Image (tube, rainbow, N blue to C red; front, side, top):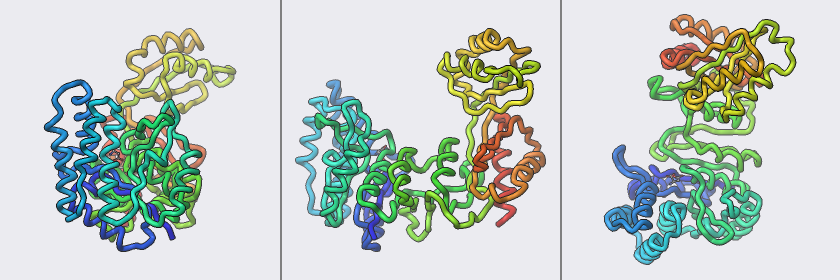
Length: 439
Ligand code: ASP
């Protein structure tokens, strides 16, 4: 059995957290490949090492004074090393980093040092081998991740290493310069390593016990999701739920490797299991509820629209001309509605209306602003009758006016449009009818 374990910044923010991580790793022999993030925040008001590195580099590379922040970063590592009682000195590494900052080796290089140094500390602490991600994770000259080359080299390299630490977040370009993934990218590294070694499972350790059915800022203490499919996760993540980097699912998904989100501070919690597919019956009909505010709708009406070939294409063409993407497009016989992000749309609204008039000569065009979209997602909806009915009666009871309904053909989600002001009560009402009422 082989497991890849990735630990997020808050799991490695201090020596105390490192010790918890050490215990987790040592308690299971299969946890052989470790991907650390950089030390994160120790409290709400603390700073992440990655943010400090960006700030420090910006100062050093423009000739401003950077000594204070550089010392602060160094101190973070020294405290961890001392707290763990390790015989390790990073002076040489810090000297090299300082020289490279002054030589303007790049912001990506700077940010990556957070994971690099934490990898060295982690390897020393566990007695595992350190494998620099710059030697095994590759990008092309334009900064695009090279999946096949990486997979080949990384699997070859790790084949003969029983236990290794591979720092997250970065790799290198053909000329050797360091390139990082986008923020939170250690999740992606963990997934790449899991694919390369054909892991049985990719454990992603963070500071929450997995995904919750909905946002805890909207509903008090929402229940955790036990099992979720990759498709459900995509739907929820797209609508604003976030725990895992979006790109982290692609490497493992292709290989059928499950991801288990776990809590370093509560290792006894089972967390959330993300799988390709499952026969396990979901506990509730719905898996999750997520949503976003800030949409507006463009309602277009024209008699006999349904028989006018090319109508939809011509309308969408106008949006394309102005570089506006659309989110949803419910339609009736003589009406068509387009949902767009308000902030992308406002600057062009009058031009778009004029464009629509020119393109399809509608009877009228009407705009409505300040709308929210809510996605109710669940593989269980397919086999449960009356899901839509339950949603709408719950919303009616909560006195929420439904502006739009869109059920995807996958029967995996139902999208509901409401006024921004109704967003919170709507989510609460849906949560209560499907979860609270079933507990
Ligand atoms: N340390 C990086 C960040 O703060 C990457 C990560 O934590 O995954 O974004």
